[in-house]
Length: 464
Image 1: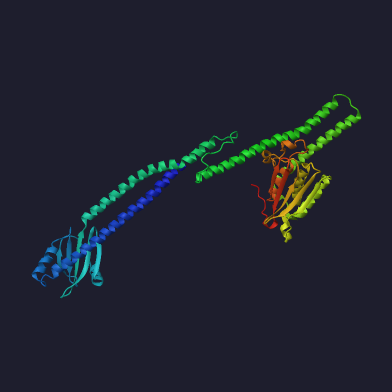
Image 2: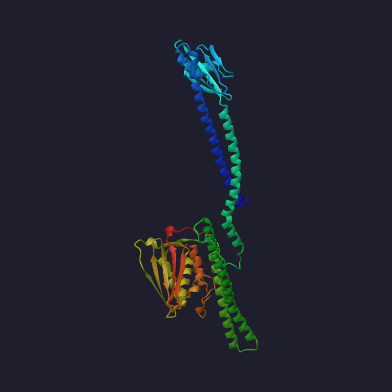
């Protein structure tokens, strides 16, 4: 069932329930007030009947005449009965069954007043004290005129109910159509978006209502998809280039060597060159394997408590072993009073890979004697390492691609590397609920900030 139909039915059902409830309340209280009002009229008739029948010989002629006049102003279908206290009928006028029984007479004696309905006839019985004895006077009547009016009211309410439902269904259908129009528009716009049109965005996302919020959320998803597609395209392009370069060089060297006989020294040079290219391919393969291992099966990685400062110093030593000519300065900005705030929860081997990659990247792109600086920061709930170099910097448009494997900025393509270090560090830090950010300016250098939560705040990683 379409949402438009559901909205119409729900709208009509709610309105019908309210209208039925309103009609029942109106009819019930109208009937109740009519009955109570008519009972009061019958009660007055019992007094008139009592004065006319029981006091005829006890009052003067003028009063008796007035009582007679009031008595003969009968109610429609009136019937009256007067009983002695012993149940003997002493006066009767009018046809109709009043339902007077021994039980009813006893109730009148005890309560002095009863009222009840006998079919459509309403009956009132009262105890009337006289100078001789107490009598019981019953008067009854049928409120034919008001009952007819009540019947008319019932017809009006029923007809009005069904007429209103027709109007409500039509109005609800139009209301639902109007309400669903923004969603229908979103559906039509989404259907036009394909893998080649990810730059398209939904309109009507500037409002404050739920539909605008839906459009904003969908546009954010499109932003992520567009970025993912762009990163995938960049990865494929750069990976193909990085893998093809050493293979092309190896094939070229071999083809040239096989064109004619060579001296042993020449064959040795060719083999040495091919060996270097093969090592380059091995490094690329290892990098891809490390990225894959950091991306899957994170739940099986063993974690333990580590001192972050000790981890950084160990990473510094490993980086210096690989780059003996480099100079790395590591300082504390604010050493905490409680050393437990330096403890993080993680896998030492993986975190070492991440930190070493960041340090080596900074060394690689620092032309001034390979000198870089690092600062350990202790924040409220995390510890961080800020690494700065004074290299060529990264263009603003290239910054969003620095975590794409094999991506390399245009201004550093002449520097040896594969573009694997930062993507691998980013994957490892994500497993540890850490973050990495890169800020850079052309010809001013690059700043990389890696952060990890303190051990007591660590939550096990669950890949999304």
